Amino acid sequence: MCKLRGHIIRCLCGGVLYGLLETFWRGHTHWTMMVLAAVLCVPLDRANEYFPWTLPLWVQAILGGLVITAGELLAGLVLNVWLGLGIWDYSGQWGNLWGQICPLYAGLWCLLAGPVIVVFDWLDYWLCGGERPRYTFL
Image (cartoon, rainbow, N blue to C red; front, side):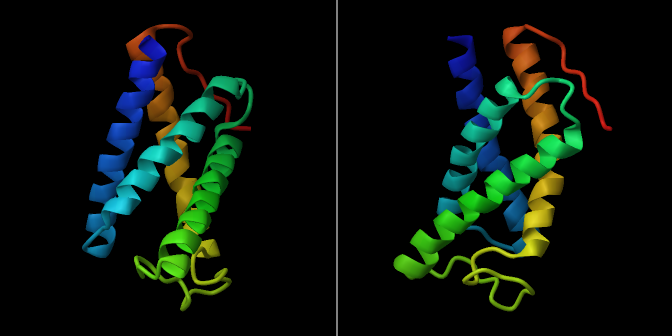
């Protein structure tokens, strides 16, 4: 029950915090982005349970950023291309894929994933006990 409560808290916090972050960055957000952020908290949170503490944090951040980028691509293809909502468009960015993802934002997702992983680990420790988080960097 503790793990489930922790997952729910992380999803809610992830969705709300992402909405605030995007509003600060772009000046606005769309409710679907908060849902996407909440949903993406699930694989990031679950991956934390399987990665060994010896896996360098930067590797975890890159993997997390790639998961976020894949989720953004899937959501973009459905919301922007298929449904035509036009929530975002990276067509003007170098290396974009169908205007839905680009290397610049994939890199930013990797940078964001590192602190998120650390926060998720500590929330899990504080909420459910268990092993105290520790990290390697090399």
